[in-house]
Length: 297
Image (cartoon, rainbow, N blue to C red; front, side, top):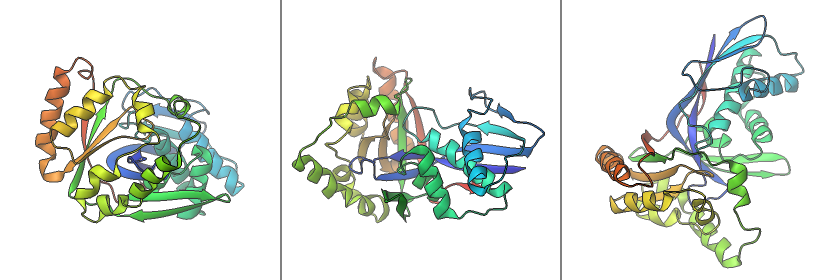
């Protein structure tokens, strides 16, 4: 049996639109067993495709094709605590689970850099798959078909409170809401802040957190598609969050707090959300930073 664990991810992190993501301590797992034919089940009741359209299987077959080998029968058992279509990297987790599981079954012919490029080809962009594979805070870019990524270890004194609405926000809809053009001033606003993301999240400069998570490229447009988002943002800030931003394409909102304050903050925020008509159906997850990334056992 091969077991793959892949962390949730939070992309964009405010100013780092389509370029930065970080890994969180919430893990999807996939177990691979030899079998005569394809069998796919979910151990936690999450509805997943049980045929060849399953993204874990699609990704595993992709790797076998890259290796020039026919894919054998297999049994895949998924566990999926990462909410789907909520901006927490659920698709990246499936993609990497398939690639890493297949790579181990094949005797690991492909290295980390190749796996990152394969994952990016499948996903279409590296901002979630890179931190899911590598852990930490990762800046990434595709250039000439090659993926370049730089990882920095997240500050373990930070904690994350994921405010998860009860509705999905598909990436396609979130993309469609963005303007086709932005001004030079808007671009500079984000670039200058994105340059400081590593200092804020990795090097102890917590005073920079509210600055680097500001944005003028995507959040305001996506929040218009997220009922209750403004109320949740306001509540988190009122309770002392160091930063609040839209996670990935949404609909999850991420509050950043000191680890020492995380329990009390989450308890108070949960109570405030429950009192808000717009937010009472939201759930809250208290998460830690993940600096390990995906791993195989």
